[in-house]
Length: 451
Ligand code: PHE
Image (cartoon, rainbow, N blue to C red):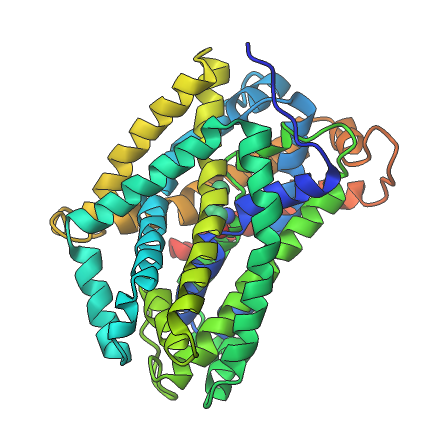
C-alpha cells in the first residue's frame, strides 16, 4: 500500500477539519433553513444540537480515525469486525450528499463568473435577482457544466496529495474567509432597516416550532459539522499522535458555528433591508436565498462587482475544502479496501460523482417531474442525507464508542495516552452512551409522529 499522508502541525489539524466543516452548510444551507423554520427558534435548537450531539460525536469520530489511521470503513472494522457497516453507510451518504452539494457549488462558481464579467450588476430589484436565478437553475446545460467543473477542480486538488493539496489550501484561504465574512456582517447590520432582520434571526419565537423543525436543526448540525458519515474519522486518520483531539474538536465546532452565525448576521438584516423579506410576513426562502440576497447586498456597495467576485470566490473555496473532504471518504475507501491506487480511486469516485450530480442538477429542470416521495433528486439527496443518513450514522457511532468500545479507548485517545488531562472523559462517555442516542431517537420518533 502507498504511504499514508500526514498533516504537519497542530494548527493544520484544526484548519483542515474546519475546512471540511465550514462550507455551503454554513453559508447557504443554514440561513435558508433558519428562514424556513422560524429564525431565532431554529437558531436556539441548532445550537443545542451542536453542543449536545456535535461536540461528543466529533470527539468520538476523531478518536476512531486517529487510533486506527484508516479511512471510515477500515477504521470501524479494525476496532470491531461487526461495525464496519458504519463506514459503508458513510460512503453511501458521501455519494448522495455530494450529488446536490456539487450542484450548489456549481452555482457559486457561476455567480463568481457572472460577477467577474459584470453580468450580475445588470439587475437591481430582488424580483429581478430571483427571476435570473430561477432561469439559471432550471436550465439544462449551464448549471450542469458548472457542477462538472467543480467536480474536476476537486479531483485535481485531491490528486496533489493530502499534504500539498488539502493542507496548503486550507491554511491560506480559511483565515481569509473569516475576515471577509466579518466585514460583510458589519456592512449588513449597518444597512437601513436591518433591525427587523436581526430580530427575526436572534429573537426566538417558539410558537412556530414543530417536530420537523427540530429534525431539520439536528440534521443541519450533523451536516455542518461533517459528522455522521466518517468524514472526520477519515481526516483524523491523518492527524498525528500529538494532536489534541479535545481542543481540535472544540475549535472546529466553535469556528463552524461562528461562521454559520455570521452568515445569518449577513443574510437576514440584508434580506429585510432590501425587501426580500418583509416584516410581519413569513419569509420566503429556500435554496435560492443566498443567491438572491447576496447580489442585492453587493449592489448597495461601491465597486459592487469586485466585492461580489471576492465573496463568491471565498464561498467557492469553503465549498471546495468541504467537497475535498467528502470525496476523500470515497477515495480512501476504494484505496484501502480495494487496494486501488490513489490515482485511480480518485478517478472512480469522480466518475461516480458526475452521475449523481448530473441527476441532481437536471432534477431542477428537465427531470423535475421525476420524483421520489414527492421530492426531486436534488431535494431527496439533501433531505435523506442530512435528516436521515447522518443522524443514523451519528447514532451508530455514539453507541459504538459509548457501549461497544471499552472505556480505555476514549481515555487513551482523548488524553493522548495519559499526556493530557482526562477529567472530561467520563462526561463524554456518558453523553455518548445516553444523551446522544436518546436525543437522536427522540427526534426521529417525534418527527415520525410516534411520540
Ligand atoms: N460540513 C460541510 C458544510 O457545511 C458539508 C459536509 C458534510 C462535509 C458532511 C463533509 C461531510 O458545507
